Image (cartoon, rainbow, N blue to C red; front, side, top):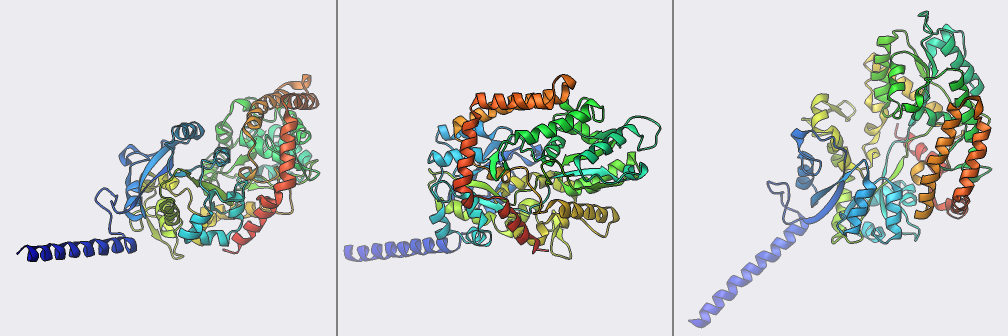
Amino acid sequence: MRKKECIFIFAVLSMALIAACSGESQRAESPPAAGAEGTNPQKSEITVSVYDRGNVPASEGKIESNRWTKWLNENGPANVTFVPIPRTDPAQKWNVLFASQSAPDLINEFDPNILNPLIDQKQLLPLDDLIEKYSTEYKQLLKDYPGLKKITTGPDGKMYKIGRVLETSPLNSLFIRMDWLKALGLEVPKTTEELYLVAKAFAERDPDGNGKKDTYGMALSWRSENVIDGMFGSPGSSYGLVNDQPSRGFEYTRESVAFKKRLFDEGLVDKDFANDKNGARARQEFLNGRIGIYPTYVGSWFEFTVTDLATLRKSAPHAVVEPISLPKSTAGEYIPEVQNPLQATTAINARVKDGAAAIRYIDFLNRKTTGRTLLFGLEGTHHRLDENGCPKPIDPEKNKTEVAWAADFAQSYSRLLDGRCSLITNQFDSSKPEQKAGLEIYERAKKLYMDPGKKYRTVTLGEHMPTLPKELQTTLNTVTKDINDIWLKSVLGGSKYTADQAYQDVVAVWEKAGGKQIDEFMMDWYSTKKADSFLMKDLWETAAKQAEMK
């Protein structure tokens, strides 16, 4: 009897072992459906950061727990716990998380001044082997866009970041009221001197014909100053190329300041422009029909060319607005700032327990179906496909509540994977006259500004400039404020404080602060690392590749 019992028990245990092994095999090949809470105990566990912009409607939950975190857990390859990072001051939060060894596995962060020091501190994981072994989608992206490797590689030649591919397009523009030019018998300005003369006419010769002196020649606040600085080749607080060497270009900024000072002294701009910190006042004056030349940042070309211009025409029914080339200055011809097409967005914590799961999650995000869902919502619920197979909102108001804030979950998603559906031109419906007109304005701007034959005010796009050592970065941050105060003092200071005097003071402050060390660092980087860096020639090569998508 004991012998038969032993045989029976052995058989039962054998069948249980076979079932268990079969279950492991099945889990490895095909993960079962997620549980009711959106997580699956058979998936890997990872933690992922997400920007908290404070824009999630109360009805939708919190940025770390909502319909899209549940969707990602139900449909993705891992159980994810999301860690919110305040968008207003991410550096402080990251410092606390890394100091306490509680930083998430997947680090979504745009700022190279946050990520690059983490590489030096051995806090980030080299990704070459993981990508080679576990990635499909992102590995292919690296082959299609070789520049991605340039922007994600650390000083030791290993990749430490994940990058994404975006459409490159103008971020800034110089708009002018063409109807005012016509009314005053003026031509589109081709030089900065002509631009000054047009601004003077717009402010003094009643271009709107209302019999009042109530117009400004030009906007001069926040982003407007950036466009004007760029027109003169001033790199602002960064570095431009002077005689093929990185330079702060203070002599170029002097010319820009002299131009702005001239506008201010002659009353051609809003006297209170310095207090318009975010450009909201200038924007409102433009929409009210009171500004003739509008240099500005364009966050959305659709919003500006369709919605904003419609608002302008309520105040000025005959307004005609066009982008124009940045007029030629003493430094040459420049283009305004453009969108970075290759952007490093993400890294993996060196303390990660399951690097393979993190890479698979990156691959999951780099699928068109995932990206579309996080950007446009669910097909049939939030969007439908048009005749070109591109997602179009069904109910914009519903999407504003349920979808608009979800884009940060797709931070590492390469939007160009969606082909022409990802392009700005696809936002316009040419069957509607006002949108057709807006599309034509955007296309003219792109033709004017995406010009490789003209100069760019910095050595390369901001995110691809090298990160300074901590002590030099601290010096730069401090002295930049002092320098900006000097330049502003000159603009506002009348004849008692000229641009030439401000230039001398700026150079003195820079040298006293130890600016020469920063200059030497930048020149050394350019001479030794430019072949491995993403420079303007790489931008134009990427832009040419994107143009083929049309």
